[in-house]
Length: 186
Image 1: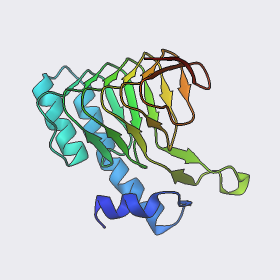
Image 2 (image 1 turned 180 degrees about the vertical axis):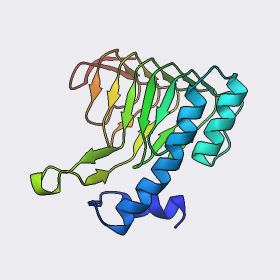
Image 3 (image 1 turned 120 degrees about the vertical axis):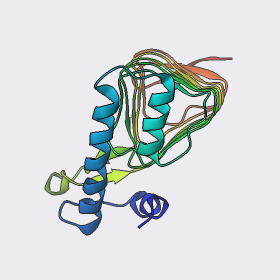
């Protein structure tokens, strides 16, 4: 199954342990973990980081993208990067559900972008559901921001440091807090 077919199949689905889909995801995830550990085990030039990320994502990464070490992703195949992106150190992408980062985005240190959640039903708790995260052009996530599954961050939006984003952020606003709320238009 292609990564695009996999992404389509998992959106909103309950993925339960023991299912063929759950097992396939974990095989792909294990290979990604090896590459992420190699990338983070020592210093690499920006070009080397992009080369690792191209292998992890199976997509071309533009030379204008800068990603500081360490950078973590659990799945890797469902990330897309635009151009002129800066991602600071200790950022984690949980990308099984898809994470799309458009051009000119800034992501501060220790941010977490999460596209997967566990199921509410205690009997199915080990299973997961996935929903894509989209960060639009020129958005800025301050330090230690968490973005939860299914959220879209609008064009030019700013998410203040230490915020948790639980629902969509409109374009041209500043949000802050947990849960993040609009505090100013820009």
